[in-house]
Image 1 (cartoon, rainbow, N blue to C red):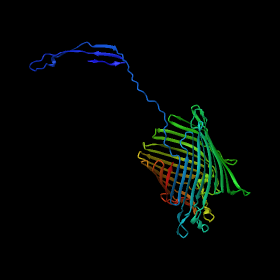
Image 2 (image 1 turned 30 degrees about the vertical axis):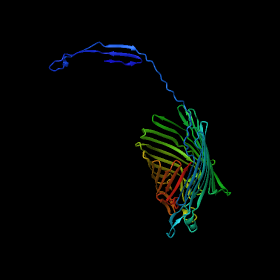
Image 3 (image 1 turned 135 degrees about the vertical axis):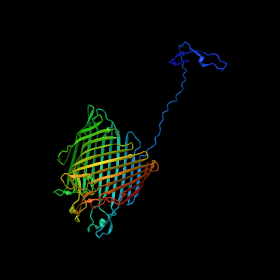
Image 4 (image 1 turned 90 degrees about the horizontal axis):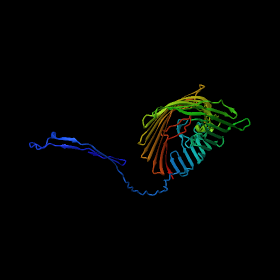
Length: 551
């Protein structure tokens, strides 16, 4: 036996030898017996010697480096879409923009939507008729934006204009207006012009203090000048480094100048009013182990002209703790805010609001707690409890006296009252690799006025679900069903409970190729009539079919 390993050019030989003697064979068997064999081991021979290896390199030529430009596929930067449907529904729009650029981006968008229709009702003799069958609801918008990388930040500018007509169903049918209400409902034309500029520095340096600023302005015209409003809003994001944490020092403010032609002073001139708000929210964020927290103070100031409201000082608290990583995440907190979006925000929430309605900046604080996480790799959840405390909640009302007379314009008023709302809510989501995505949610609301009065038009619940299905990346289906709970309203003979209703929608998008899509959409699947006292803003099952072209 011998072994000959070679290590780093060193050759080692180990040789073991044995001598054996076998007895002679016996004639009876013709074979020698193994037991008669003797074996003797000889001395082991070990030899070590150096071994020199002579390399024989064979170099292979490397092909020269080639630098070339590969042409990327051009992504569509422009879009045109058009869809038509029943009730004389039309939806047309476009979006134009620049191609790929690492320096700047611009775009222009336009949109037109219009629809008509009424609802079935009974006249004084219980004869069926269609009321407001030529009612027109219209929305038009033209907007543009430009964004450019400037230094270490991003400068963005935008401008837009909207011209909307909201159909008004609230006029009661009387002898004086029977012909009008049976044919065409009155409408409300609203113009809104906006401009904005912002500068944000997304790349954060260690000792950076300034992080961004924004300024927005608007001019709003209601019904050809019955109301006009001009306003400014803006904010600055400061963060002061303090050792290993940052002290957040954001400042936000808003100012609105409102003129209502129907509200006159003693000289017969329209009254102009100025509403302002300011919010300063110093806070610090940090973590201790797995616990993340953000603690600070909200200093909110509001007023009208030179008068000041009582300062609103809710604290800023937010806590997060992953009890079981990605499975159970707990959170809780307290936050406050001021809504000074102007009279245009009130009319957007209630298109039938009177042009002599009062305005206030809304202040609220919100206390919340809950949990979120994932039950499986495909199923997530969230549930929580929130308590909202409004110092001056905007409650829409309607006059009992006005509805009992022919002088009722059908428009709503607004009262600002203290309100406390308790809202438990929950949500479940499900996704899988087969193209399905399902979401279910529920929110139950209990609301009371702090002065013990009656609270009008607050839905008791919102329960619904959404389903998405992507079929081989060619057809995408989307469906939404929401149950909106009952609300308490004012009627001719006193308070009445407005019924709950279902809001159902269905849409499908078929992708022919990367540039052409076909769309199909159905709104108000359940033919619901959303009751606003005596008015119905949504009428009939509405379906439309359209095309989307990208280039």
